[in-house]
Length: 251
Image (cartoon, rainbow, N blue to C red; front, side, top):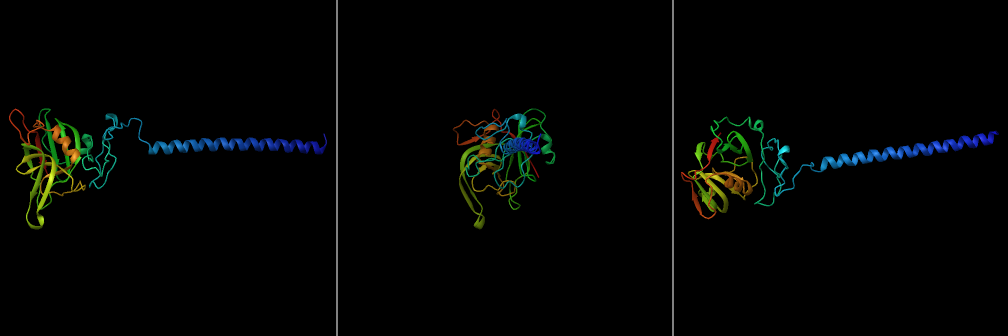
């Protein structure tokens, strides 16, 4: 074989090898690109068990919750209830389903002996927790009384419910008049739970003594707690046959 033919053969082999190497590089790059895209989608898309319900709830299997950060300043995606609708006063929520361990730092209270429903209010943590016996079923970030108008502490029962009312009080620069306050539940004198449309600063004291909740959260508690409302009476009082839910308020 002449040197010329040998040289041409070597060059052809080098060209083939180069093409094979280039093809291999393209294949590897495509795999890396696909993996990167998959990883990116996995980090931004909701999990497969996400339920696109009215309030964007997750399934019970993924409801092992940590408490949302305090103070609640803006909409956040929580462990079970999607904290969206910040601009919709009747749909925004701070609710979450807590694990018992997530409530370990609340002020200790004596739990009821049976499986009755009851409401725990912790002023230092600005939390309301709805229980069935010793099981917390839902919790809310709230706003309670300011230092000059603190929320009363003690053990009470819900005594009256009002679907909607005007609230007014105070004198001088402290005077307020708030029409259309929804889902009101009084448990002692003028102290109660109610919806709030005039602020979204939950997680810090803001009120004249009542427990401020979002409208959606206040409605959930209104429907869940006793006395069971008849859907028509304007001022609905608890009775022996239709008692109010137990409320325990602690510092």
